Length: 329
Image 1 (cartoon, helix red, strand yellow):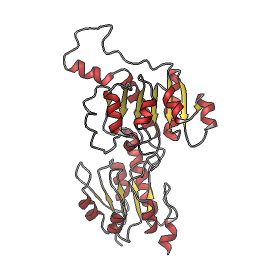
Image 2 (spheres, rainbow, N blue to C red):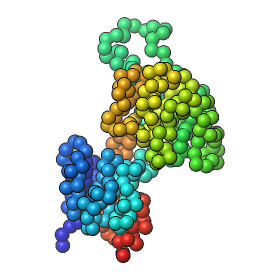
Image 3 (tube, helix red, strand yellow):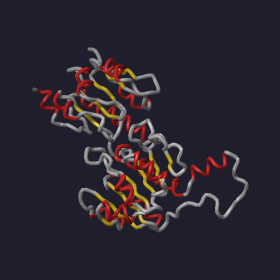
């Protein structure tokens, strides 16, 4: 009996591939780049399962191309705004993600950005490498104090809470917004639930931890940036379009806020013109989950989702269990 076929749209850790190869015929995109639209449509055709990246747009056209043999689209990410969940459900195709395993790695990355922007670490590194460091000076590359300041967390899900809990070591006051108050989180951290405008006005550091939905697109724009302190720093490890990058570049150029740390971008991998030239912004290339341990766990989780679906089960991280009824019908 022929093994089920799996297509992987980008190279992932070998642990996941080896797990899949025990039961499946696996083909992996060998290029160190995302597939073009035409390549994606051609490669997924007729596959039983597809392991996708957040950069792959999985819409009705792709789902029709993959065909009725397909059981699952397994996203190698916690986010899934790249997948048309309704279209997948209508075709009886499961969609899955990789939650939980990247919580700590992403929370750590948000803190790395916060500290790097506040203390001008990247700017100082460039300064030293350029041979400009001629000796210590009392006014050289002065940054912002972190300890004892007010931290604003927009979105108190798993990652937002993990990020806020790390603020204890810096003796920070924590403000947060969420769909509803989180009493247990408040008891653990002393965090205070508030509205977004109050948070933006009072926080010295604002960190974004919301999913990308129609209601969160451009959640931070011209008006919101205008509420922030001139000394404030904005951190985004959520999704790029949560921030209006044009408005952010203007605010940074006009020094209406102190700085920003962005691990995600509105039109990723493209940057808003003018962003890369600003010393007040730190812009790593979407490294939130980029630890050896986390990326390995993400791959294993995606593979386990695929194997479960191919075995006729609802996968453990299923986003649309109602697809089961469509498959039966």
